[in-house]
Image (cartoon, rainbow, N blue to C red; front, side, top):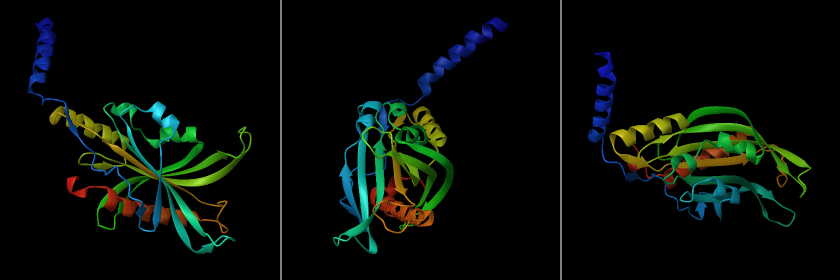
Length: 240
């Protein structure tokens, strides 16, 4: 009798496949991949993806990246130019091969010279009163200062990141994976996810006279995210 249980169980399992939804539907991310030229006081200077990103990620991965500059109140150079803060924005939209399109920044940041010191989850409320779960990383980045890469400068950095899918927002890579599994099994849908990260250095910044405190960088990054969330996320598509 026991010898019959395995083939029976296997047969029932295979038969269950016919009751699953038909796969192949694609749920688009609720993020708008077209960046505007400005966001509040920030000037959005769009830049292309790096060669490493293009070669590492799947060919149908999409990118929206910008160096964002905002004038520091009352601060000018000797030439009379405004002294800016800088935020590096990166939006990466997954392709068909989700595992080869986006991943946690903890995987790739060390290759960019970052040593991650801490990781904390928190929730930010946008100006439109939308709740956004984000992950806060504190790191130190070593940046080469000569062509031979034998001399370096070090800068403390803050990075915030989160993922936006078809109808969900999360800062947790494992939760994102579980959402994917549920959608594929129960809804027959492959979901495209956008990974958004913003980074700002603090401490002694070469073009800023006074040191930038961690608290100042934190406040400016969180305010940037609040504006970005209202401007770029289609909240009417996100499950409450």
